[in-house]
Image 1 (tube, rainbow, N blue to C red):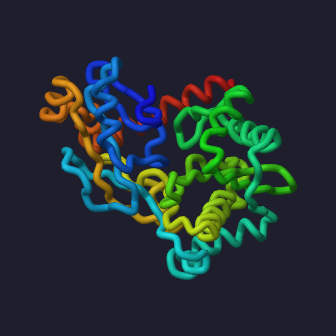
Image 2 (cartoon, rainbow, N blue to C red):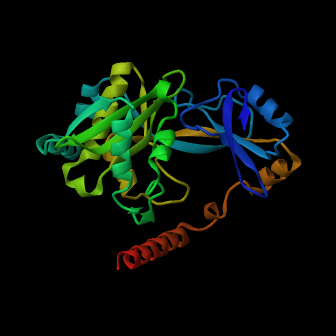
Image 3 (cartoon, one colour):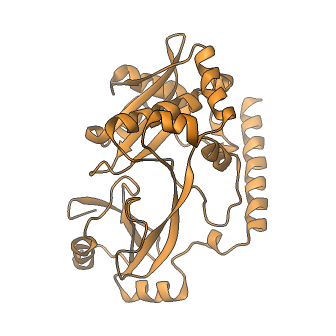
Length: 296
C-alpha cells in the first residue's frame, strides 16, 4: 500500500505492523501526515514503526520509542577513512585485491551488469550456512529487484580478468544525508582476492565525492545476537554502532494493547541468546545436510 507517496510494508497476522518499505533508505520528515493516512486506510494496520535518520540521533517526536541501531561510517574524505578509521589489516586486504588484479569502478545499470549479478547469485544455493534467497532467480526478477531507486543509486563492480566477481548497490536517502549498502555480494570462490573489502573502500570514496556524510551497512547489532564475524568485518572496515530512536505508533485498539504488553516483538526477541545460538547452529547443520543430499 501507499501513504503520502511512501510505499508501506505490512507484516504479521494477529498484530499487523507497518513500516516504510524502503526503511533505512527513506525517512519521514514529518510523520503526522503518513500516520493520519494510515489511520484512515481501509487496510488494517495495528502499529506503525519508523526510524530517524543518522542526522538526528536524539528523539524528535513524542511517540513511544525503543532504541535501534545502524552500522555506519562517518565520511569526510577517503584519505581520512584510509588513514584514521581502519586498521592496517583492513588496508592490507584492500591492497591484496589490487595485487590480485581486482579493479573496482562505478558501473551503469544495464544488461551486462544484470547478467553479472545473476552469475554471482547463482554461484551457490547457500551462504553463511543459510539458503541464499537470490539463488536461482530468473533474469527478469534480478533486473526488477535491483532496478529500484535508480535515480538515487550507485552501482559499484569488482572485476577480475574482465568478469564481475562482486558488486555493491549504494542508495542514498532523498536528502543525501546517508547512503546505504542495499546489496553487497561477492563470489565465494574469489574470496581470497578480497573483493568485498575493495567494494567497501570504493563505496566510501563514492560517498566522499558526493558529499554524503554517512555510509550505512544495515544494523550493527541484531536484538540479543552476540557479535559474529559480520559485525567484526564491519568494525574492521570502519563501521561503528550508532543508536537511533525507533518509534511505535498504535493505530488501533489491538495495536495499543500489543504495545502495552510488548507483543509487537516476535518470539525470537523473547528467547535467551543461548537458546537462539543453539537454534542457529541446528539450522546451519540442517542446511548443510540438505545441501549435501542435493549434491549426492
